Length: 226
Image (tube, rainbow, N blue to C red; front, top):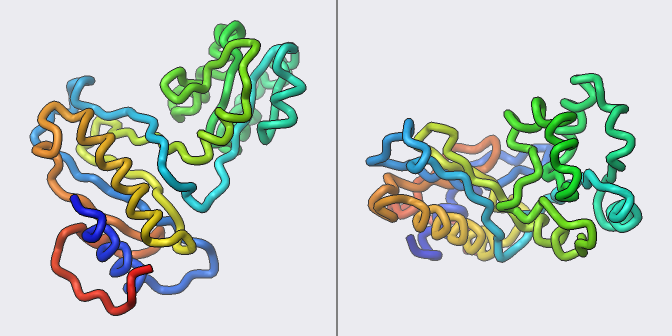
């Protein structure tokens, strides 16, 4: 897949989308083929660090012990001390917390407590602190680089369906940056598939409320690509 093909498809998706009263996101949709989605090894679950920000703030909550509390309060959007976890006995409160943040960072030595208190709600939502994303940290961790990295990190999952989808920018992001973000995701997914690009059926891009546009199809671009 070439960057120029992506830019053309992104421009077309932008051209055919009606203007909305909110900032729409650009989604990348990768349809897969030749896989048995019942096999765990044929499913994709990857954290991809993008070359550019997606145009939306990524909210991070830290679940920490006393060692990291002060730093977590300064760096992250919210911090919860492990000694106060008992405040979250109500499932509604935990669901509200899960829905309020994109990533949860946890201190490694309190992970059993995190799992006990939040696991039942966080797990099915894919919000448990994950070592793959660097979100399980030691008590002496430097949280700032991790927080900055998470601002450019997307999680791509197939969820037992031959389709991977994630946001790669907004309509206010330059098409060049969105295309490079989309390529980063595409290349990461390709390398995780058993037959690499041969397991890619097709690729689409779309705005939140817009129609999907297939990447690589011959299309007329009515505006100059930015």
